[in-house]
Image (cartoon, rainbow, N blue to C red; front, side):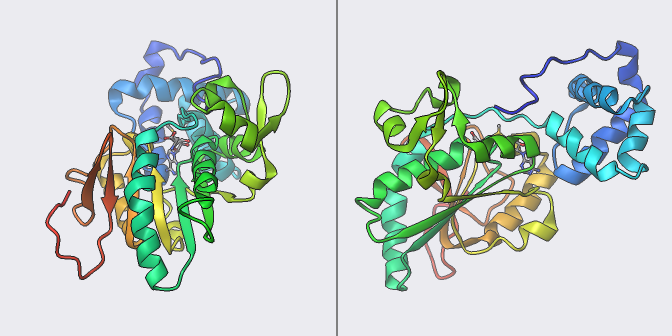
Length: 302
Ligand SMILES: C[S@@+](CC[C@H](N)C(=O)[O-])C[C@H]1O[C@@H](n2cnc3c(N)ncnc32)[C@H](O)[C@@H]1O
């Protein structure tokens, strides 16, 4: 779980919400991260700012805005504020139908086409990985398949997020029952070791399959360098973005993916009216977006 949902929230005064500095802070966050806070949710932003205002001893929203825009440490402060506002709700094996789609259709298809080119390596990206549950789930899934479908294959998983605190938790790989509630006893025994009375820690082998990094999906200078991916999971991230920032991220994802690669979003998310270059593919209980090879002439589209 991300930090924003767990810490106590200081309540801003109602009249403070009318302060135009909050709108400027909202616009700044949008510009940097793509995360859009509508006016009716401004109270949430204000309460998260209030924690940072206490931390930097800013007396008013306008003074805090100056910490974010003109002071020497503005970049560090902006990062701290982003750590407060992002929501990191997640758990392992959150979407079994996606894994079933991988096992039954997508992996066999990728294996066939990559085998034909002489490649036996898969590259996955968990974009917006929060505290790591999604990439560790993918790693366990691939490890299980490596004795079957993926025998002789290698794979690596890139896992990225904007939130520094989430990435620290992800790298540590220590989880309690909340995160593990959908993880079977068998997988717990195979891929975790005891950490303390209530928590388990991910095994070193599983950790070695994942590279964690801080990537802001709205940072073009980083996004353009992520190439050669077979699968992108960007689940429950773009719900916080508006249409313009979603479109921008999709342009990147389309070029980050190899031809024939697939993109998964959260189960309530879609690319309807966002991007029509991907082809929508239906699976039982899940959908995915396919980057069709240039010569593909099928008809199903998003
Ligand atoms: C609700 S969590 C989703 C976690 C996981 N993908 C899942 O579905 O269980 C959303 C994550 O998106 C991250 N996020 C939001 N905006 C982002 C951005 N601009 N760049 C990278 N990550 C971002 C947040 O920090 C948060 O960890």
